[in-house]
Image 1 (tube, rainbow, N blue to C red):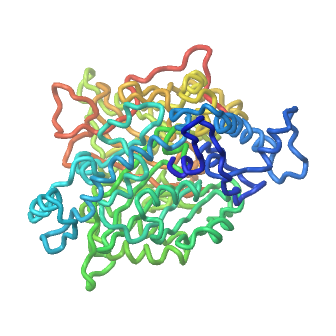
Image 2 (cartoon, rainbow, N blue to C red):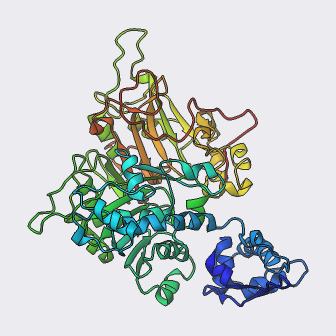
Length: 595
């Protein structure tokens, strides 16, 4: 917002607004962005010229991108130009809608607290470097304790408050109540100095708007810190932009051999000056809309301290083998730019981690192996998940616990439920101790996916469906799937009108208050992401890269994960659960949102 204001020169005598020339977008005709903030930052002469014709706009045939991209950009730019040319612009007019300004201000409000929290891990006064104001002297005195209580409002304080599950949701710009939720965060929270003094970081993701991402680092004064990105969507001229303007960024596009595969993982590794690190597993791409318009989920690890120089790669393992699985995942890329982070992980202590890392990578996989969600999840469920036995006709039994799959897209599943939905994914998700990949399971499976009515009532109307790329052609071939589908409702979190890009899978008790397990992952409900269908040799073929974390109650010293505060509650902490129970069926005349 400051950079925008600097480009405006307001005359106090007559309120005339004089436009100062902005920098021209480096992408020129190949600019692909649709973020209003970008159009405030950069000039696009080719679009302005088309708008100023005052006639029916026709996109020149020699423009390199599809015409609809330019038309959508023009629709975004028109109201901005009108507001900028208004001679009676007030201060409220300057604060343009649909930008990240409110979140930038939210982050800035925390800066004073963050400055005080930068050295939060120090052990003695001699390691604290502060100005000698009375306030600082008092804080220095408080920091002499061996264990420091995190300052209110910092990300470290939020992390400790949300332990042991460490699940967070994105803040929604149109839903102010989400800003005050205890586990609601923005991207800049992940860079909060209370978590440690950042040395370098790795972002593995699908879609990355490098301009937006670097602005997030800049807000925390981390612009010069080394940043490595591994990404899956080849945005126009992105590599050229990085080479020209981003000397601290090392990048690599992951090229998929399978045309139906996708580099869809979303994981961050943050290394601090003391060589400790933190891992974040997320469902969010790295661009403005994903962090401000859509519901996303993140798991943030505790601090993972540096091991001694004499330690081996096998030291510092978690009870869930998280470290081994993360190393296997990183090594599966065979990319040299990941080698420094592989070494950081090898020397880190993961013993405090209680979740399982689940990943998919292109290839064929068999039982008791990693690389496919289908095998990894089912193997863990049949080893660690207990469900109540049906001992009498009145007792609930395992089949009373319903499986729920919630995702932001759906793949082709075949002509009938047995082809993959019940024949593969339900066999996986219905597994438990004593019942591994049960054939023809009578367990119920429900799919939470937004309907057309959900999307059209979203904060952004039909544009709310931008994160829901379910193909209309695919939907026409599997109309049977709608019998399994339920609406997106999240009233208790104030998130119904923000569409879900989060993906979760769980098994819910008949009383709707307990979970047998919970999976947060980048994997949508598709064969490409999960693998399958099961072959005669139980082998499954995976096309895409995906990453998630699996929560199993036994590793939190709990019988079940509890999601509501009942009279029979046993656990100290409630597990964060976003959507409403019981599930809401589709209306008679409604159908799934398709693109």
